[in-house]
Length: 347
Ligand SMILES: [Fe+2]
Ligand SMILES: [Fe+2]
Image (cartoon, rainbow, N blue to C red; front, side):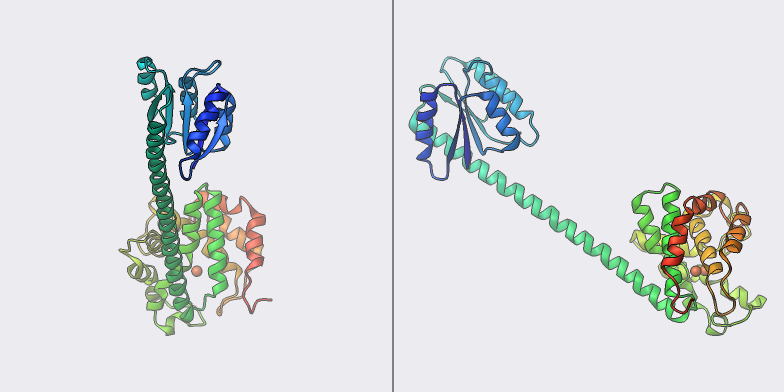
């Protein structure tokens, strides 16, 4: 336990140091200049300060005021040494949260008792602080684990859907990254960008409820088949709804709204404009762009230019114009995602 002694009188310093050395665990550090001692305290945290009140340049009260104003120095115990007659000084020192006093000439027994008490207090204080820090770290760790498990659950759920769906894992990866990029370009914060990136792979989870004959049909769907296929947003939302987990809630929203169109001609609810949740409007752009530029069992991959033209054409009708603008804001980033996550069987 470091005890900082501040007194302009060298003889007093030597005497106090001598007395303190007799206390187990106490390591006295001498200073005859309060200004220098204050500088030292910026970098070092003493466990206790013993300071004389009467000093030239900076007295004990001035030191105490400046010391308490330093960051993280409010709880370091301070004993002020005053003359017996200076009760006004003691009152002011108490206001500046001095912890105890000693009267000159210092009584050996009294010094020992007061220093020992305050060092015990300091020790308890430090243990409490390190316990609090340990607990805070444990909470952080537990939270990280919960988030990791939520992500894992979602990942596995998406893989289950992938098993039946001709849409590939690479599609889900590209879609996630397009969606996060779009969110960033729209000015959404980092947390929201991550949420949409992690929730996007579940947009078509409802396809697990669509019969194989329709889901895997190589040709175009007829009107009846299309009607059944159009149930997948609602099925997905039913699978994901009523969760207390934010990520699941967003995934449910995305599932339900990713086939809505800006002009109200989409499904299942026929919502229009900003009534369509923003996450759904973002996924609509990213999903269609990726579906067009990928090969599917029933169609080859489109040329990029043709897909770009269709997205631009759909601005204001199929897609939210703000989302279309955000998608084209950083074209190099889109192309980077496009080429980074290719389908395994693609050229
Ligand atoms: Fe879909
Ligand atoms: Fe998709």
